[in-house]
Image 1 (tube, rainbow, N blue to C red):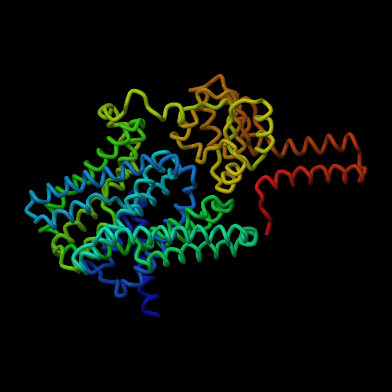
Image 2: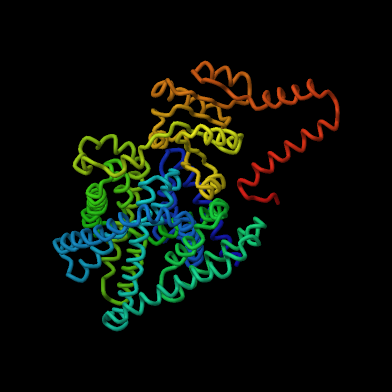
Length: 565
């Protein structure tokens, strides 16, 4: 046990050093984690003596990541992107498999090997994309939701592909009857999980959510338990964890669970990338590199073009299509598992495994930059991709609608502004970055946007050029100054009300054109001072005033349906 602990400690120490270096040179941490795996693996330092330990931790991270994603896939989101996600997945797999087969055949591989290579190139990595989108805080953007959608459809197809390959190795193939049984088994599993939620969790929800500690423990147990059940029956733990999350997505405490699992999830995911890098052996790099470079072009260029074409024909804007396309430009971890399984059964050679592993390394590294800098790439290629946007796009009306009234930040007094907005009977939206606030607003059917107002793309989605009143209850001065400057430039006729912590900050905001600055401390002092002037030091009056204040605070507190622990 001590040796495993020491080994893991050394690996994490190397990871910290490499990650620090990557931060200094401003490179994606995912690349650093894979390089860490490469360093501690057999090619260089050979520090990993118990790879099964890292693999187990990696599976924890994958399960928690897919569970958290499932928590965000409520029926409304599935309905929104389900059709386009399915279309992208099936078209991409078909075209990339065919192209990969043709190119691999031209490179001298036999039909069987070429088919496996083509299939491997067609799947994109859910784990890589989810991590990058989470780092960019763009999981809830339209392109993020579409990307997650088609990646999950691919994962389901990949799971069935793994079952088919395993059956082919054991008995020479899989019949239509066997496939039907497989589908029936999958449906039965999903139905059982849903039934368990309806019969147990719906009735025990209050007990579960009453204690934050128990809620956290329950979420982990539910996610890992359902994932293990699916894996035991023959499906992937990824699919099981995803189903576990989707089943709980509509519960009021889903966002709370998601936010609490984030730190634990990220730790295990780091080990997943380290494990991925530790499996890479570069002793035969010279032999496979030329072919790997050619096949990498199919993934890095061909896959994005396929995605962009499908989305363009479906009526999405070229920007959404472009950024979605960037997310499909790497080889999936499923592809490596598929080839390792085929190699063990003698269906493909070790050369094919090494080749696709090298393609995976190249495409994961390059696509990480493509995704992180997709806005910059779009600005460069915008003039050349007009063909991927139809004249009439479906996003125009839905995602470019404007709101007369915009509330930024809810918790610090936003409740009062929202009541006023409703009285004005104008279109309004609430912008917040707190998952619990978003969950409460969604339960009350309020119009909201989840995100950071310092994000230029969110400002574009808000369409603030047409807003009449913008109220910011957040007290972060740089954010409010940025908003004031943006409005002064693009919408100078709008009324902007900001919030500040001091008179000096208020003066700076007024200087930038802010219409009015709220100073909470001054307002509170003014209100109680006026009360004292009117009622003197009569404690009975103070008691009445106190009761009114408590009633107001309780009504505000009940909006969120939470209980102090």
